[in-house]
Image (cartoon, rainbow, N blue to C red):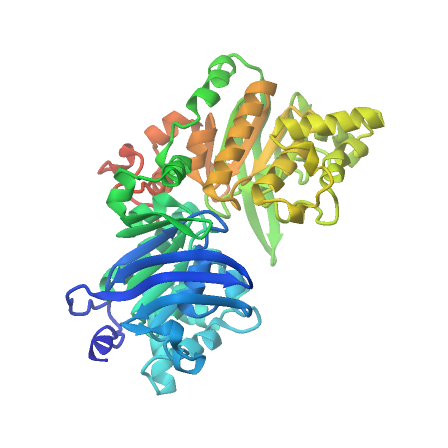
Length: 572
């Protein structure tokens, strides 16, 4: 176990001290791994090797087997599941170990960073009390030394006030802070291998970059090996030395990252590469741009927001959520609102929909003023202004069938006869690429992409002029996301729809939108066409957002203008 001890020096109160490098050897070897749930085999003869101090990414869509493989390595498969093959950790087959013999390895030698920090942490216990469990796996026996180790680790993962974090409950911390807490808990015992399951999927792009930078720094400074689970090929390309591309539990492509990126051999890997927005900024240009060229400069203004301010009282303090913002959207075009959580995007959308009233300024949609909370006075506006929510898994009533979900807006506005409504429903489904045979299914019988298409059909059935898209693809895999984007742009070209697109994914904004407003702390700090903002950003905050877009190649950034010496990385 001498090599294991060398990988686990005691924390110092200064910066990370890199351990002495040793020649790279295989730390984790997976050979012919197959996993079954009952009689159904979901992972088929998967093999890979992770060397000491290196990282490997498992790439694929939902259902590809990524997380199942990680659970097999961690011995966390649910009851009824079985695994065969070999998983060698430090040359020991851990699949053959009893739970009693394997348990000391989990946490101490093999760390785990789960996907959802809000679900991974106990909401009724402080961070400190939960960190004590991880610290118990370290070599520190003294309680005071353990607390010092915890505070030191919280500081090392970039949490500014470790004592406050130690005393806080999970709900008192932001998503980015919670993810850093999970990383701190995982590295407290100084593991040799870190398994990170979609560690940034729910985070803003800048927070995502900081978390990934942190993981990369920990890997280098502590000589930790990493198994990264992700559906984003661009992230994997930046952060891993090797890639395994999975589909339906089968390896489609495997090799060093540079080779997979430069010349993928499988059709699935090539498709996955083509579906990643960060790697294909101009993919939809021919579908998106003709309408903008025709209407962007000549078309009528569909939405006008002028000098709008909105404040809230929170715990006796006045919070300015939206501060004197102005923008306009031409008919038939897409305008994006981008910025980190807390920038004011959601409040702006609520004001636009008439769900909140501005304190100052005015909002007009198709010439009608949005300014009253009187529902009856807003019905005519809502008839032409619809919303597609962020998460298709929660935005649709699980007890209703597709036919009921799409028909409800027609019923509420009492539009058409029964036959006309049935025809409108079928047309809406056709417009989003769904078959009529799905009409009698409930959301639970649909895939994520199908659910979001139903949500779009529900918004379309009233034949609105404006659709607000609130992070409409953030809960979807990149391949499904690509399908939804194509549907949205095709509908815009066909029907002349005007979109307001809210997103933290700037790579997707670059593909989809014509104009963009960058929001920070309630203000619009930059506004213009997507080509101008992405090609020549003026504000440091915009530069920081653009620098956070994964490029797929380590050491590069997007766009080139963001590499100018005059531009500095924004820090909150």
